[in-house]
Amino acid sequence: MAGIGFAINKIVKDQSYKSKVRAFSYASIVTLVPLILGELVLVAAYLLTAIANFHITDRNLMVAILTYGILASMLVNGITAPVVSRFVSDRLFHKDLSLLLATYWGSQGVVLAIGASLYGLFIIVSGLGILYGLLAWLLFCQLLLSWNAMNYLTVLQDYIGIIKAFGVTIVLTFVMGGLFLILGLTPVAAVISGLVMGYAGFNVQSTLLLYHHFPRTIDWHHLFDFLAYFDDFWQLAWSGFLTQVGLIGHIIIIWFSPIGQRVKGLFFIAPYYDLTLFLASLTMLATTISFIVSLEVDFYRSYRNYYTSFTRGASLTQLRQAEKEMTGCLNRGLKKTVWIQLMVTMVMISLGTVVLNALPLGFNNTISGYFRILCVSYAIYGMANVINLSSQYFGNIAGSFKGTLVFASVSTVATLFFLLANPVFFGFGFLIGNAVYFMMMWLQMEDLNHRVLYQFLGRLPLVEEEKDGFFHCLAQRLNQKAVQTFAHDRSNERE
Image 1 (cartoon, helix red, strand yellow):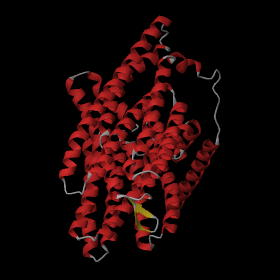
Image 2 (tube, helix red, strand yellow):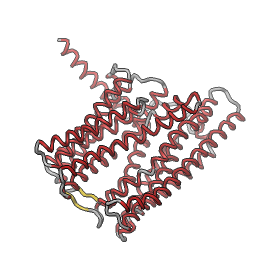
Image 3 (cartoon, one colour):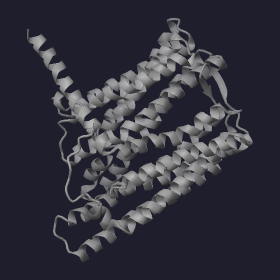
């Protein structure tokens, strides 16, 4: 979420109560609304299945296609989003918005070229069939473009515009899905087509919003400049990917467990585990909002004060005092975030289980056990992720990479181990992975707190070297191709 911190800091400059309310509202809208309205899109799809009186087989196939599309697009986005967000954040820091629209189109082209190719190969061998395979591929492409667009939408403070974009998605999904049903498409094809049209509408609305707020002149010489950041921040890209592996890996493993079901070809689901997992993951939202507003605002001020102390010629005593204030602010913010997460998790486990058992969803003691395990797992993950993001303020990108590598490895291996045990223990592997991840990131943060000055000064090279790695060269070549292509098109138009 590249621009949230900058936007919130701008909102709360006047230190008034009203500004703090606006800050929490902005963080909640940008964090919660995409998820809530995204889920309303799914609700619209489920309403269509109820209206069309779906057979359970058709409904499972629709769920499998949608789930695979979401998870696969998140996996690809996990690689690109951290680096693209870093690029966008740097442009915001330098108050240079001139390249954002160009890199938006460049990043959309890159993620689509890579993701569509890989997922297309999977669809070909999946045994899904031509029609369903094509629709599944189109849905994946639209989801992938949507996640990448969100990296740029978070820069905007156009709350109503973002809500309208998702509103269009919901309406298009329901209306177009219903229209395709009336036209005689099979129920699964009609609903997936509606979802494709809905997310296509979201991408159109997102692009219009960006054109409205960003400078509209596109400099084709800088279309792929963001790719150079993959040389500088390759560990950041790997961290994003490994985080998604840790979050998604256990789900895929459970699909092939005794509680999993083959829907068609290589498409599997584990209905009750998937449902409890989604509900439990909502508990992380409290941590996310608290982190965005508390740490990105309060900690950012003390962090900036400490950082600028070096350029103001502060004495060592003043530096130590600024360092003490900064680390104290960070620790207070983290403790507050942890306590909020613990309270939300306890409430979710105690009340959520009662509510879910009362609903006609077929919950039993085993499924309630999955829910409790996953609630605790996501709570620990939320806290570990906040600590990880906070440590990156101190340049702890290498430590973040190591932490996510351990998280992905332990979560996957532990889940495979429990796969051989009783199904009652499913979810414990994910819990263990998160516990190890949390402990590792906490220890790293403790270490960073004791050597802040070294992180700012000792780790910097004496002589800055110009990097000219693979992605720098690739960015230059693609930029040249883009200029040649569009220059050629313009010359043809003039002729």
